[in-house]
Amino acid sequence: MGVDVGGTKIHGGVVDREGTVHRKHNLPTPVESEEAFFAGLDHVVESLLDDDVAALGFGIPSQIDQRRGRAVASVHIPLANLDFRDRMAERFGLPVGIDNDGNAAAIAEWKLGAGRGASNIVVLTLGTGIGGGLILDGKPFRGAVGGGAELGHIVLDYEGARCRGACTGHGHFEVFAAGSAADAVAVARFGAGADARRLVDEAENEDHGAIGDLAELGHKLGAGIASLVNIFNPELVIVGGGFADAGELILAPARETIEVEALPLARETVEVVLAQLGPAAGMVGAALVGFEALDSAG
Ligand SMILES: [Zn+2]
Image 1 (cartoon, rainbow, N blue to C red):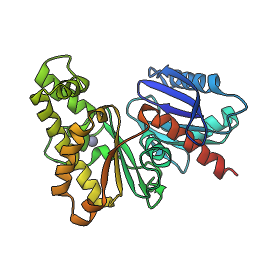
Image 2 (image 1 turned 60 degrees about the vertical axis):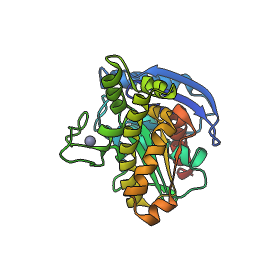
Image 3 (image 1 turned 120 degrees about the horizontal axis):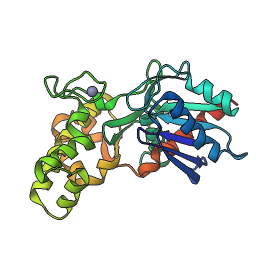
């Protein structure tokens, strides 16, 4: 079973090793207290649990300490300093794997989506912020304690605007190129209530202002990607999340910036492509993290 724990919704599903989703259950994420949060989460698991389920995997929007299976801190959900893996293993009596939600989506695209067969991949998820994960030398990158890579917080302009939420930084990647950045641009062009979806729709209807706005957002996306390309020399950069619906309207300008900002060897190697798994990537990736726990449990 894979459970994608989002800031607004919990998406659970029973998933096989090939990524086929057999059953699903969704719930708005209770965020008023830790107790309510776990009541909701347990309900999703219980409603899907049967003898076919061999392990549980969770993708959580939190900093994860893999040594203890602990959720250390979270921005959008009431979860901090809790031994999440042990709690779930004790409660449900199954092997449990947990990972950062960005890592879970990256693993799904690597194993079953646009990244199949590649060994060095950067996955970016353009939502409210920019999430994502890295596959390096054929395995998910988790860092010293397992927190993974916070790709949305690359510093593009250290004198720039304050970053979002609990981040104290300035001019970070997600300030420039996340879906929420596109929402703000849409409001500036079309007025209150407009959002990234509107911007994309107008651009697809040949609105030159909207096309220009998306090109500018795409160039900024390309600046962040170029930094990642220079550091990691990936074969693939996979771009997903809601704002990736803009497709070539942002990816083509992004590639232009990468041509300038990335160094020759790295930019000649890399391909920038759209994600293939859509919104299910988080849940499917969480299930793959569950299989990882099952396999390492023997
Ligand atoms: Zn930041």
